[in-house]
Amino acid sequence: MNTRSKFAALGMVALSFALSGNVAAQKMKEKTVMVGGAAMYPSKNIVENAMNSKDHKTLVAAVKAAGLVETLQSAGPFTVFAPTDAAFAKLPAGTVENLVKPENKEMLTKILTYHVLPGKYSSKQVWAAVKAGNGKAMMKTVAGEELTFWTKGNDLYVTDAKGNKAKVTIADVNQSNGVIHVIDTVLLP
Image (tube, rainbow, N blue to C red; front, side, top):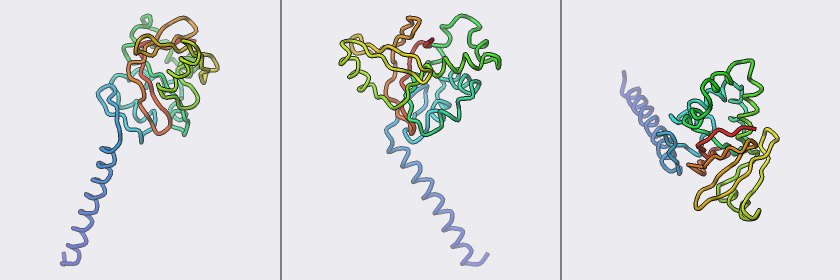
């Protein structure tokens, strides 16, 4: 290898380190939130981040089974109330296994889209809506049905059509196409 080739190769190696360093530096500049042991990056979309959370494996599997991956990777914006694996574990035994069967795709899709609001709503915006509504706010989901939001002390809650109450345990996990609020209970239409 001649001297010119060595300098070219060395330059390419240096450039690749510089570029990878810029990507790493960009990720470090982002304001991340830890969810399920992983940093959630605002530059990633809802699906990309959820796949990295060890607390949302059931949700990710359900989203895949319902065929909603492409939708939740689109521009949105969406506000997702994301139940943890522990929330799914509170359901009666066999419920999740039954819902992810191909013949139950329609029901699974309805349940999952019931956890999604069209648009991006920060917890501050939801709190303001609750305050403006004298203690509660109703918001229509992508599934077309409403969720009721309310507060108790410093906590934000959501109640579904069946009366189940979910607490927002991690709020404002910003995404490139919306926001995720982690909840401790699965919502049912």
